[in-house]
Length: 519
Image 1 (cartoon, one colour):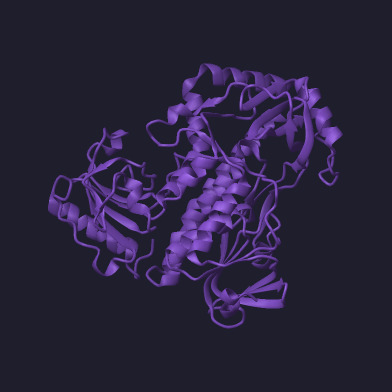
Image 2 (cartoon, helix red, strand yellow):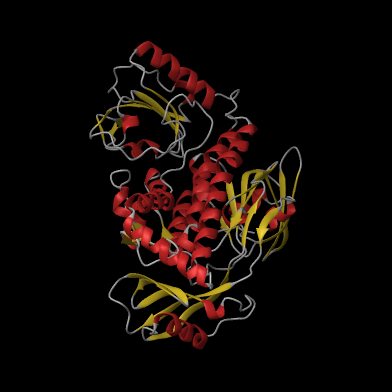
């Protein structure tokens, strides 16, 4: 057993054990580590997979990395593409409409493998262990904590912690151990996906084609390699258990597109099913779920990775607050209340896209043609779909709902005069590096908000002014706001009276940050 994990194997109790060392588990571990929580990641694989199932990183996910100061390595390696598709239709969604709401008005193509490498390097720098070849076989819980039983290279082991989070995929052992129902529909149809070399690729780095007999998707992976997906109506009924062959894949691409793009040397081939499932609950006591353990769906639009990473950002600060003792356990119920509806929306969205792509009937072809026409002629529709895919429109319910910004994400607004620990902070996300609440005085300090004091480990207090025109009408009169660690507004005020704003800010702080509060 590695030296840095011995203490939680049958001995000292860790804060959290995360089962699954994919992007969601790694990001959750990073968030918990930022909160000062002792966390251990258990991963079944001896080494990460050489191929990437996911490629797409959407604007809101990039914003979350930016909040922690980690976005630059992703941008350096990834390929920004200023559009995305809906249901693989010919008329693509123009992400430039997302300006000025976000600094990232594009889809970033970045292989999942690289995202995992960057996150694991970040965890290693923080001293967080990722223990490979640790296969979790069961989880039990009591009033004190959880016991996670695993088979390791050193034999059977039990890891003890206050909480466990299952980030272990659609077949989650954690979810099954907790008795949480996974409801939905199993695989009834399949499509082909592959990473191949191509000698005659299209000029465009990303391509979608919609044909009477199927649809096709291609994106450049660099170095002459391409991700291709063939939704071939002739092969929809092939069993997921039947391994795909390169000849089958090449013939399918030819059948749908009229060419094979000179493909050769398959790097990875997969037959992807249309199973669509969601956990009825994301929590059972001390057991929680995130990512594919909580929801699986068709890869339409590349939303799965982003949904899971956003789950982790929502859960991380709440679980950290409970383990650190300044928030009651009931706050974990808000994870279910906030993220389950978001997951359900993505599930329904992917079902809708799949229905447009894989409907082989005459009616299905007519529906695709009409929807393609709507995308070309209704800018408001393309804008709405772009915002939904980018996850910039998510509003969490409840809280101090007397202001239109409450529950909404904050954009990375430029600031003037703001500082943190004596250093200038040029934009709002810089205040969120430590994953703490931020009480922000937008009058430049005229309000005289109280210092963080005894809450300094979980609250930053800053003052500044917006350096640019406020992006939306709701920001026009905002004088102060309390921002959650995940970048959503907990409280905001337009009140012109300084004393009343300060009093309301104090109430909001006590509600969200004091141990007696239940959010």
